[in-house]
Length: 389
Image (cartoon, rainbow, N blue to C red; front, side):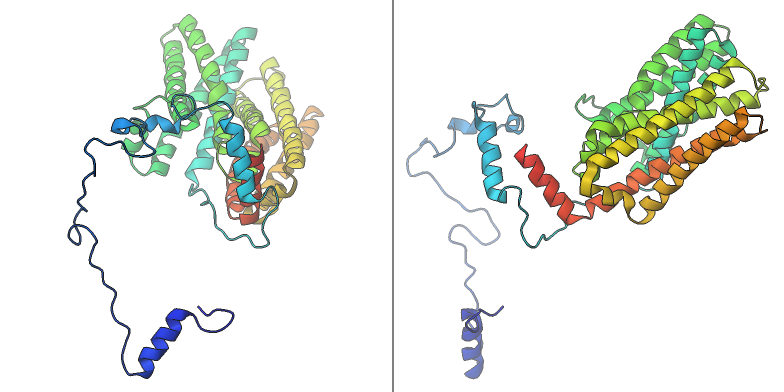
């Protein structure tokens, strides 16, 4: 590179040697201590003398420095000093004129992960339906809901294995139990949910109805985490649009899960020959409508909170998917009204549209995360806002 007032010193030296027909001398790479490629040998000037800045026997070089309260470095007021230093280093909330990225890598998830989110949501909603049916005494509806939950959760583990690449990687996730990690807890919850859902169906097949109902309660309890942890997992990342949606992303996912689960159970009830005026079918229709309206309302509120980050939802494929999903929900609501007025098959089509909308929402949210991670200005602004908190 050249300086503003002419060539750099290195360029001038090379030009002088070139004019004389020679070349600059090679650098002397002889190490100051030891032999080249080997360790540098040294000894203390005074035996057993302490090293400045360190405790004796390196007692302060423990792994626990990664944590906040179990190390001797912790002192009252340190957090505020660190925040203040971070703000000074970043120049406050003001971004520089030129933001040079990339700062983070977009998620490398492919189709397996959003599909896993969708199947897990259907399983969660079906578990809720099964519990509600048991409470109200709708035994046939409870039986069908438990089977739908088992059928929906069955592909989840294979989808995770496909995403991870090797089956052993999923098993390795079960070697540890980390309550602070949504991914670790999600793997354990998926395993527990699959076990209780399968046990409930098996108990019902052998006539152990009381055990089946008890396992149904456990399945629904695990479903509260299975249906929400995926939203928590996204919001725990550094991706701006996901992190900014931390307060509402999990409730949005639960609302979609409830709607798709109710829609799946309703279609299964209809396929089993249940009468159109059956109370369970009517209740499931009301549940899927209410849950989808809640999803739309929460999504609208979240979009207003996103501010400029909302552009990640309105770019490329994510924009198309969000538009399709919202259109499917609105069409499903209209068909539900038509079905109540006697339009034959409209209610079934509405349930199918709700299922499709849930799938589109999952793919759209994953795609929006990729868009947001590629927005270097948004990433830099989110980091500064976090450092100022």
